[in-house]
Image (cartoon, rainbow, N blue to C red; front, side, top):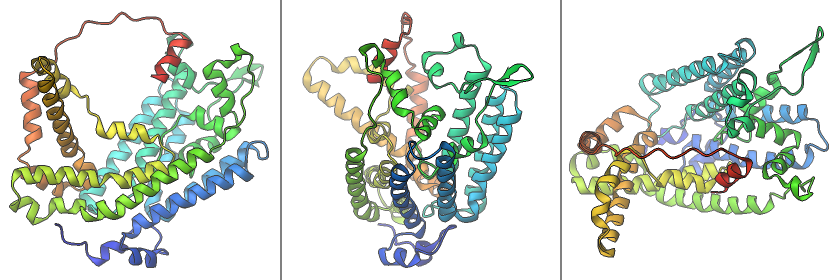
Length: 428
């Protein structure tokens, strides 16, 4: 087992220190206490936002402003002056949004946002040495980068491409003019306003831990049109239904709060019992045998998941999708092995069961090996971990690519997309 972190690590943060006594009482790092406090505060603010600033009582501008102010406050509370990085990126990319041509807006936005994110990651790892125990601003910065590039491409689809060149999904999400404005007898196309842009990127409901939603969906939520958009999506007008009642979120919120509580309990038990820091200590790297390292890596990676489930569930993310993304791998390597080996194990149920168990275990070990750097967030411990594992997955992957190429599949006949087919794909 790893040695407990130093006492100073529990209070290390770049954000507010007003919750330091609570951090010391619980024995949880202060940056994590600040994160949880902001998430719980965001949940309370969302309740007040829905009750007293609902679209029927308040203008969209007021709702946008409220979402921005609380979002900025939460960022500063969690990350202190490092939150300047988010504000700089947002302002620079808004400048690109209003000045760049629609034919290049997506290219410029992507290059600037991804370039800035890359520089921040490099500086965090090689210059500031945040290490394993500290939550930093790169998480919200990645979410903001996703939103910037998503919106830029959707604006490009709506203003810079012909409708017949768009797929059904692109056509639905494209940011189009809200209406032509007369300027000297002509109509000019309209891009998102500064207030809408800032609210979409920095709103308190998603700025800390996501999710990355689409601009049109967010704008419809702010303006109270989400039920109308859902009505159009499911095409219920054909059945004579022209309005939908506002759904009650009570059941979904209670369910997600229950999942959040379970995740928090697991975090306080499993994650603290098997901390990720143990993967870099002397016992794991130099004394444990290879099979023990494999098993312990799997256990530690599983124990590290509850804190991510806690954050994503509390942020109303689609929990089942998160589970599927973390547990399921259908990569090039998996396809190659399946195409070349699976048919040898279909002659009996016993062989098929053995194949299923073996491939499941291999997938779990591969996922644990692959996501370890994203959990450790430090270069030297990651290299030390992979050295102790003899870079086995790197070598196995290279051998599979060289000797088990994926068999080409016959192209499927493309069928025309209709509204019913799109709805069926979403349901599947």
